[in-house]
Image 1 (cartoon, rainbow, N blue to C red):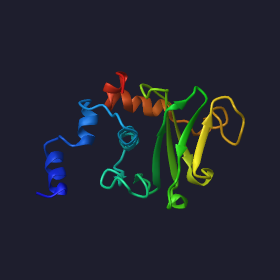
Image 2 (tube, rainbow, N blue to C red):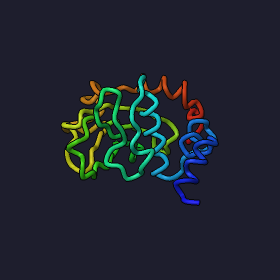
Image 3 (cartoon, helix red, strand yellow):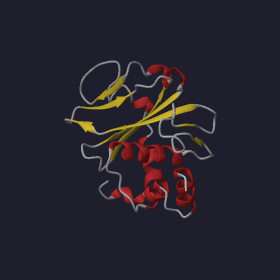
Length: 167
């Protein structure tokens, strides 16, 4: 049996990673798993049907296409030293990404503190920082216009209630 066939069978049985996350039966441990969980949170926040590209291919050049046809990428970060969130944007197709969703978790990934929806043209360089106190092009104060935390937290409570427990 091919690996792909096994993945299809697991999905049909509801035993694939995405389903197990959604049901709270599996807690993400690695950075890759934590990243996928945030991708799922973003995926489920859409009211209509988006296209999930990273669920089908881990190394996809983007995470998906929203119902409005915009290419998006979802990135998550823990809070580093109580100072900032750091997002790796090393992507050869970065110029094609129209929206970045940035999830800011606390230091141990047990709580989602912020979610920002940032237009792709504003995201420059290979690393995107959102500091708490430091000034700069972006920080927690001047990026508020892009914050969608409340909407995402509603989705978390509705569809990912197990996240109230430690991730």
